[in-house]
Image (cartoon, rainbow, N blue to C red; front, side, top):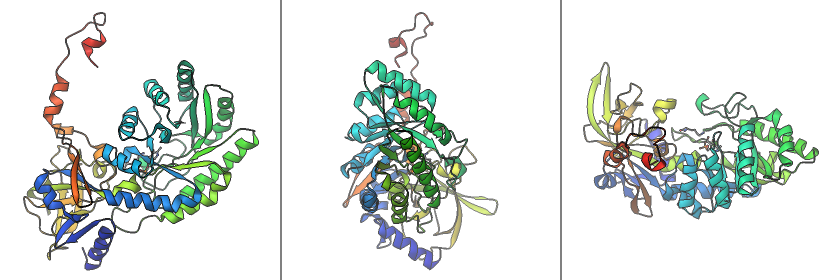
Length: 444
Ligand SMILES: Cc1ncc(COP(=O)(O)O)c(C=O)c1O
Ligand SMILES: N[C@@H](CCCC[NH3+])C(=O)O
């Protein structure tokens, strides 16, 4: 790392409540190394202030547009994180029954929860309507039929919006683009008018409006403008058909810079909303996930071994792709933050890998690290979003702990889940024939 890079990194870290104090990486003034003396590595560590600052900044910038925020729970579904955001008045965007239960457990009122996702089950829809969810974002004709049927059986009206696929290239990683024709998400924009008119006639459906979400990790904001202009034009057409459009859900996707560079400007994002849809007079919602929590988290890990692999020195750490899947899934590079600053920084090159038996279990190659040794702890930065929430126990590894730092104190907000927690689940049920099988016998 050059001095200038180090300087920029320090500035960014300080801005986000992370800083080197007396040579130690600190999160809200607490030494990460000292936390790691108490909580075994690997673990996730989040800064509450960084989340609060991000939420406050975004909601301030959005205020003139009238848009409210529903945090995308999939980015970080820890109940304490959801509670923290809910206390700031955030609503939630969920994509499964499990996320609904998490949001409810965090005390989020159902009237602030929207339900997206292409494969909602009948049971999930029933539960969502049962708790009085604010809105279900419909992603296909077939799903619409099920929602209508469930609402009829429950003798209620299902509050719905149609998720539009506007055929816009979000200019992001191909695996996280969601608004191009052919992507599995939403309903093709040209089909909406006909479907909307039919839905408006159903007494079981409380048709509220439209939703759009074109993808994740957008660093260039212009695709939002394109999508929202298309959405606004559709609203006008629907209204000219005599159909009511009261709500617009504008989706999430705001990206962050994993290299600590300057990310998208949220004032500009708010300006795009203002220019394109505010004048339509609809109730507006945005669904950011990564932008609110990504920079607030780090994955703390310890070097187990060093080994020479060809010309490369490889550091094997105790975290792996099952803990942080983004590098192996998308080739994402998370910055490495040494827990101790060192005068030798910017000297050493390492490939950092995890212990999982997959060749792709590689965090990346870094050319600017201080010397690493067995027992050296480092953190992967920008890991507050799509880190813990995407973790698995592949290779029968533990699901690691999550720690929240707030105002000079820390607490474990998710305990490590070990094999001892999992083994009882694999105790076989008694053998059944199809005829003798009862719910109790399979105990699901
Ligand atoms: C419907 C929906 N809303 C919101 C989000 C949040 O995205 P991000 O974390 O990129 O803001 C996603 C994920 O891409 C999503 O699928
Ligand atoms: N999980 C992805 C983003 C997908 C967002 C959900 N549609 C990531 O880590 O970047």
